[in-house]
Image (cartoon, rainbow, N blue to C red; front, side, top):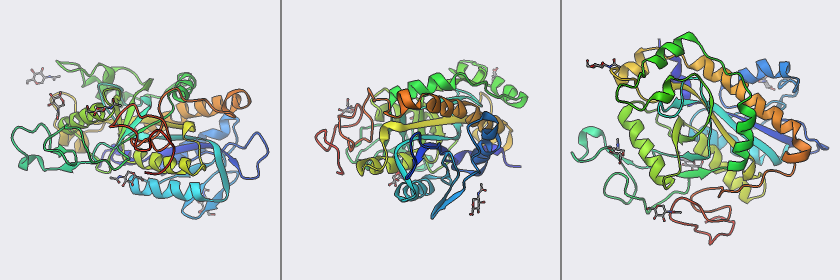
Length: 370
Ligand SMILES: *[C@@H]1O[C@H](CO)[C@@H](O)[C@H](O)[C@H]1NC(C)=O
Ligand SMILES: *[C@@H]1O[C@H](CO)[C@@H](O)[C@H](O)[C@H]1NC(C)=O
Ligand SMILES: *[C@@H]1O[C@H](CO)[C@@H](O)[C@H](O)[C@H]1NC(C)=O
Ligand SMILES: *[C@@H]1O[C@H](CO)[C@@H](O)[C@H](O)[C@H]1NC(C)=O
Ligand SMILES: CC(=O)N[C@H]1CO[C@H](CO)[C@@H](O)[C@@H]1O
């Protein structure tokens, strides 16, 4: 049987939104990306007195939405981008004050977090947007087969950019969400405890892997390719560090966040959404690399890590605290929004301001398409 970790690629996004005609306070709207990541909200939200997601089921061409506005994007970058575009352009909703909680399971870096652990990100990095040589054909002195566009070897800073390489979200909002999320009692299970124990740090820096699940602040990597193993994980860890000019912490790996965020940047330029109201939350379903003395193949396709059920569970457990917090403080804080203190947006500076990573704004600090 395939490990459940196989489905890691999915994302669940939860948005808090007002319907077009809604009088204040706008009704909450959740948003999901992949069936189990959505089901956990359907099953549990009614018990938290925040309403029933299935009470209002509005069909928007291209996606499906429930009532706290729950959107299932589908897995991988193309599905995520297409679904969020369909949502944002739907005349059914006014999303200008919507909080988007992008929430899904993920691969997890054992140096930063663990199975069932919850990460709130500042950066989403599209790590595999590069040339790739099969490692069997790469030059002998290369540490990885990945090489950035218009460069001659790994980790030389790229001069050709597509614009979606790095996305940065509102750090002050992340801080508020973190304070809510840490109130959650996170789920764990015995099999995950046993698999974590294999990361016993024999000359490794895997101490975080061995702890019980907690909420942490660290970043997400996006790649359509579901990679696994120490060398690729280290390569993308390096990419995250270099592309964020040393500030990004490679932690969770998934297949959608770059795409979802790119759409939200474009929609923010059009005034349809507020990019300062975006949260990226990922929960660890499987480690991105094997423990000591286990092959990459066995780790991904033979052994059971059993992080999937607790990762799904903890999406809700941490996520609902964030939703409750936003609702409870709507009038005082979240209606007007939390002003970002960091740069937010893409590597081109499309939303204005000066990126704190990358080669600098292409719009001279102004908002607009490049
Ligand atoms: C929402 O409605 C659509 C069709 O109207 C249906 O196919 C879908 O199963 C419903 N979703 C849920 C979660 O009930
Ligand atoms: C990652 O970067 C470190 C430090 O620069 C380097 O030693 C290592 O070989 C790199 N790993 C890969 C897989 O490229
Ligand atoms: C891994 O294998 C080596 C060599 O057999 C052994 O010395 C080491 O203790 C093993 N480490 C773990 C964590 O099992
Ligand atoms: C990020 O690092 C690159 C490569 O060293 C450099 O060219 C760029 O100016 C740096 N960007 C910022 C905002 O520090
Ligand atoms: C490799 C890949 O699919 N990258 C995508 C990242 O997201 C943007 C926006 O949706 C796409 O244009 C890129 O193609």
